[in-house]
Length: 125
Image 1: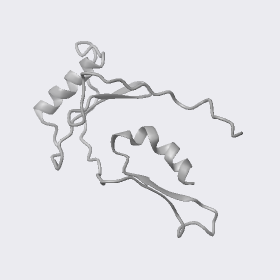
Image 2: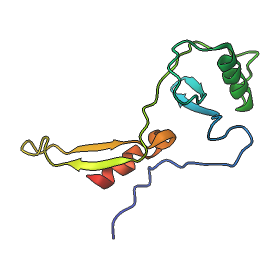
Image 3: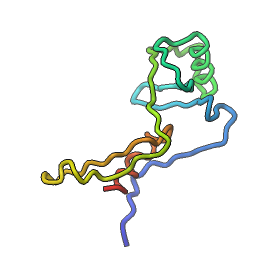
Image 4: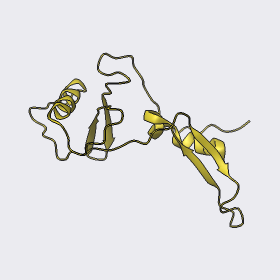
């Protein structure tokens, strides 16, 4: 019987009124910083944050329990998420084989990438 890693993360998902597939609302803790997102504008290539996008982010922070009257943003940025219609998950049999390196192509998970990439890479390897 294979041992189960008891240090795996527990993930709680809820069907909540604060976001949707086209109007995401999320928070990612990164050390002493909370990253709040987001917007979803398919095909948009604008680098500047629009006023309505900034309002959306402030509203999302409030919806997620952040006191936006006491906690001010320390940075803002835009990012472009590459898109592909399916996940690519495969072990590359051409690169690093002689050196004993396993190269796993593991992308295209969309918004779930941060959550599932480790498990899917282990599965492919």
